[in-house]
Structures are given as structure tokens and as C-alpha cells.
Amino acid sequence: MSELTDPATDPPGTLRIGRADRPPAAVLAVSGDVDTCTAPRMTAAVAEVLTEAPPVLVLDLTAVEFLASPGLTALLTIRRGMPAGTELRIVASGRATLRPIQLTGLEPGLPLYRTLEQALAAP
Image (cartoon, rainbow, N blue to C red; front, side):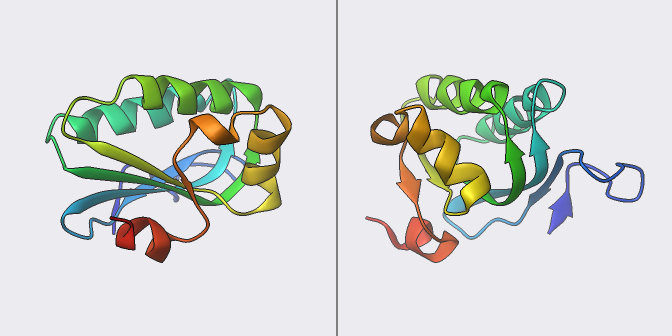
């Protein structure tokens, strides 16, 4: 997995993003906190991957420990900004990610999967 952030210099509680493609999908694995300070970095990492026009982009949030409202806004921004020809799939199953999505009523508007394997296997 290539690191888009550096865990050696990022203190605990920050955002870490790694890329581990599983062709034909580009996979971004996000961990840490997605909040006011870090949500723009997640959006920027997605934008960088989208320059390659992958057919599928999987945003794996299973290791996210805290998803604040700016992170939810970032997910909506990413969803709305997906280019034609690229499908977004979001992996969110833990209490830290799925619960805020459900509580805010965003679940129907986001392409959610419980596991990375389910996201990769989706038709």
C-alpha cells in the first residue's frame, strides 16, 4: 500500500490515507479522524486519484475513528463531484462511520458497503 500521508510524522488522531489498488478499482484506505482540519485532505486525495479516471473508486473508511460533520460534507462533495465513467463505493460499517451517516439521514444518498470485499465484488 502506498501512503499518501506519513504515519511517522502524523500524530495520533490525525488523518492517514493509503492507496492499495485492486484493479479495476482504485482503493483509498482512510484511517484516523475526518474533521474540520483533515476533511480537505481526504477530498484532495480523492481528486488526485480521479485524475487517473479509474472505473471504480473505493473509499474505505473502516479504520476511521471519528467522522465529524465536515467529513460527512466531504463525502457528499465527493459523491456529487464524481466524473462520468467512475463509480464511487464507500466502505463504512463501524460505529464511528456508519452511525453519523445514519443519524444525519445520508445513508440513502451514499453508495455504502459493509466490507471492502463487498465493495469490490459489487456489479
